[in-house]
Image 1 (cartoon, rainbow, N blue to C red):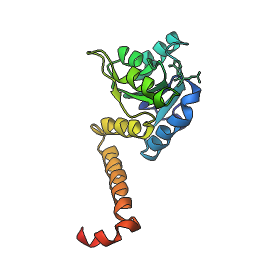
Image 2 (cartoon, rainbow, N blue to C red; image 1 turned 90 degrees about the horizontal axis):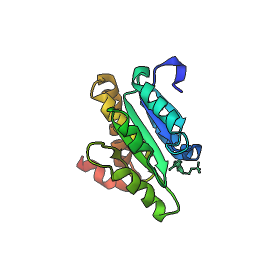
Image 3 (cartoon, rainbow, N blue to C red; image 1 turned 135 degrees about the horizontal axis):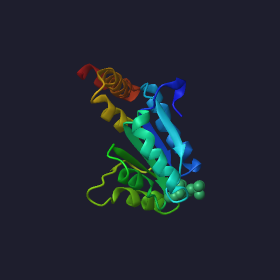
Image 4 (cartoon, protein in one colour; image 1 turned 180 degrees about the vertical axis):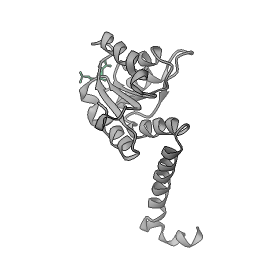
Length: 170
Ligand code: AIR
C-alpha cells in the first residue's frame, strides 16, 4: 500500500507474488522519484472479481497510472485496460517460453480501442519511468526530478573512464 499515508499515484499490479522480484525495481525507482505507489498481487485469472474491485476503486484513491505485470498467458494488463481509461503500462515477465515471448505477445497484441503501453520483457524500470513521465505532464516538480535523473544518467556515462579521451570534446 501507499507509504506514510500519502495517496498512491501509481497502481502496480502483478499476476503473482512470483513477479515481485522484477517489479520491486519499479517500486524502488518510483520511490527515488518520490512518487507514491501501491503494489498488489492479483491474478486476472485466479481472482478476477478482486481485480475489478482494485481497478474500480483506484482513481478515487488517487491512482493516475497503472503498471501491470504478468507472465505466460499475461492477460492482466489488458484486463486492467478494459476496465479503466487511465493509462496502463504492461510489463511482460520472463518465462521458460523463448525468454518470455509468450508474455510479450499476450500483452502487446491488444485489440484496437484498448491500448496497453508495453515495455520490454522484464522492463520494470522503464515502466516506472514512463509512469513518471505521464505524471510529470501535470506536475512541474516531478518534471524537475525526472530531468535531474536523466541528467545524472547521462553524466555517469560521460564520466566513465573509458570516455576520458572524449571529455574535452563536450
Ligand atoms: N499469471 C498468474 N495468473 C495469470 C497469469 N498469467 C502469471 C504470473 C506469473 C506466472 O503466471 O504473472 O508470471 C506464474 O505465476 P505463479 O503464481 O504460478 O508463480
